[in-house]
Length: 181
Length: 205
Image (cartoon, rainbow over all chains, first blue to last red; front, top):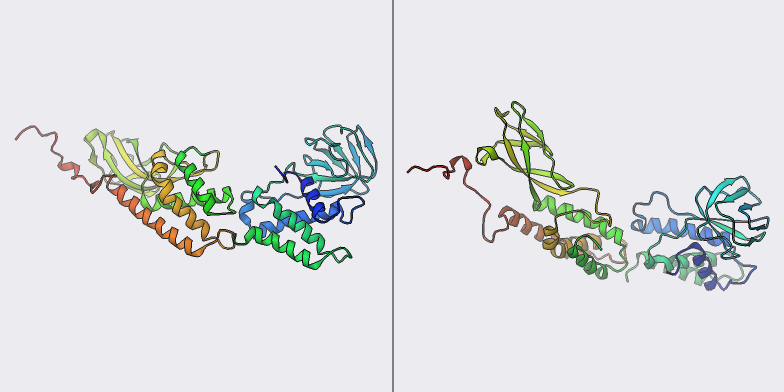
């Protein structure tokens, strides 16, 4: 199913932002941050999307500072915030090097030990995303979250962004969630 | 898929009428609708046997189903030829006899019930299948549509349709109440002549 995992949202947003080649204009951390805000906004607009959920899903993105080959310890420049035992791990720059079932075993300061040894090499500078294995959003509303990420990116006061596009995407997010069909 | 084909058909009918609605939200309203329906109609009734003890006037009444007792409907003494017994239920679930029994009797206690958590594993309230077959696609369908459409700021919000469906739902509750009072007998009545005047054991005359 499309948009099952957080990396799907990142790549969909990059497609709409025409930002698919590194170095990126919009960092993965910014995109992740926008996604987290979209979740919070959806909680405000549509509480029924999160019935029974006591803590909303959140993702954290941090860049590695050291390469790791066939190991299980990731190193970061600073202590990654919000990373706890059991979170799933995604390498957004080198897909599939970290298994879909791999989780955080022990976050210790600037290093994070994974439960499994990775498949290949996690390069220095790769952005690692921590969070739930799948994004628990009903399929009817997944596309709206991509709209929010893109709209949020377009809001930035940069040469490449357009205010009208930002407004359209943010409106598309809101109307998908609460507007009449 | 739920435990009842009638509920499945109701859900299949609800979803296209509420574009953008989420199943957990529908199920949440469905629980409230069924509860309101049962409280209003007293359509779900069950008889529970209670063994009395000499001198004890209060007894716990525990229905077989996972349900909440709403009201005490009647109490009959099975060992005395189904004679009516004067009793009350100030606290739902606790039968209080007006006069403590002077002998051990078996009472038939009829109570009305409503749904209770937990629901089935797929999130639907647990009610007898005959109630599902009878009311899922009529009363409950209208109730769910009305409740969902009355929610503000949703793609399926529709105040006019909400009023229409909720009015129909209230009509169904009234019909169900009458049907329960008449024991589902067409033009019938559930009334019985007071049992202390029962003459079926008289053989003279």
